[in-house]
Length: 172
Length: 172
Image (cartoon, rainbow over all chains, first blue to last red; front, side, top):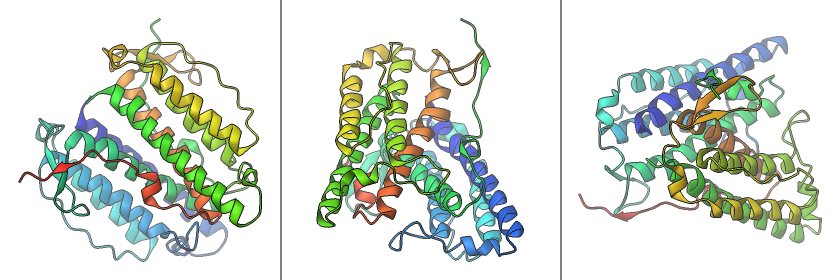
């Protein structure tokens, strides 16, 4: 298993899937003659974070997974997006950062010590960080963004979430 | 990275977290003097699958991830659950099956050919199967189950979802 593939490559695939879901939300809003930006503040529950936050959190989890495992500084992206085009730009700049990372930077990443700002004085290893925090957190926010659009009536389905599988012809 | 840790161990941690969320849903229903079983058919959107399906799908994705990567037959569990205690039993028997798997059975799992019943004639490798299908699908259904309870008012938070991190004292 490759931590580069498990973080940068797979999370980029999923973020491009989120771009496709947002494209469908824009088409939906146009057909309903309302603004796509109405989705930005939409929530599944009054005490849950809105769509904009779910996109920001998915992007940041991918960004930090890549940067922490590669041992490089992550660019700071402020959480100021208030429109769908701004959220699309957030995804694009996250993808652009992930593209700057090289698989070679991930040598030894499984054993690398990862400090976590929300747990002062504590750390974990790269393998545990990816498996126990970055992956579940990334998929949590991505799925919540998808569920928000779906529950608002946007025509997204499982194929808009699972967009890619590496396949070959069955041998056996 | 270990495919055993990434599938059996991590998915078992997350399923035990789902058990904790269901315990909170039971407490919530008791306080409201309604039946916990009312959650079973609850949906985020009219054309989305209900809570019972989300639990069944999370359980089956974990079961098949473990069995396919270990190269053993998975026990068949019928999707007949109609009550919360039945869904709790489904999670428990999934966890019990995962506990029968041994890390040694996962040697060579990354390169093992995995056939997929929903893609006849096609296959993928164990590493791609876990990364591109099992993990995103597992977290999708787990998060949707969580979102269903949360949107119904159950007092679940991120700590009921991310229940475990392997930590050590920061060295640097």
